[in-house]
Length: 89
Image 1 (tube, rainbow, N blue to C red):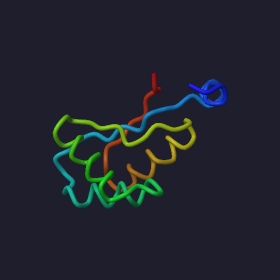
Image 2: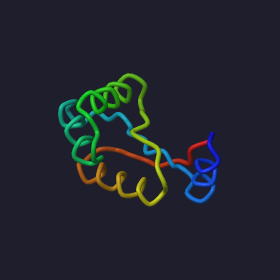
Image 3: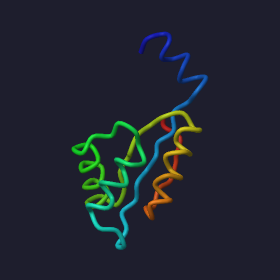
């Protein structure tokens, strides 16, 4: 890890946004909600996250500083999805 990366991680520790599988949302809605909620998320990445959550019960959407993680979580929740945040190791 570069020095500036370690400083950034100390100042702004990363948090993971976790998408949880549910029995209420259609797969295409989940993919479109991910793309709408997370700027720059590609269709293939959104589909991969959706599929991982579907198969494993949950999937990491992304890791970022806490304030951004909270923003993305709220956007996902507003689409009717289930999302949580946890500290990245």
